[in-house]
Length: 131
Image (cartoon, rainbow, N blue to C red):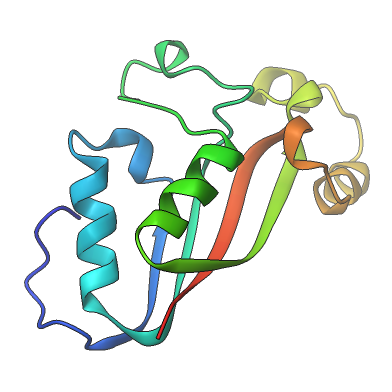
């Protein structure tokens, strides 16, 4: 993620799901993802919500990002944030707690409910590289 073996401006889309929080040099990775994107190319990324989830809770996480921090960082790197969505509320997060929900249909329903970013366990951001 921090040193991609591709030429500059060769992709229309870069998807980075649950990666940035594990990296030693996240800014280097973000610059690389911007480098390999064409102008008006799309970056889609997800990460745990640093407003709710702290890096120390997972020993493999180097850092967490709040939605606001991530949007600000992407803007500074020449991206226009198109959308930011929350996925699954942090109020019910955790595999053990979610397993207590009795019906699969209810679990599916809960996962599809729109969640405000400040309550979301995971954040998905879609951004376009500015021309």
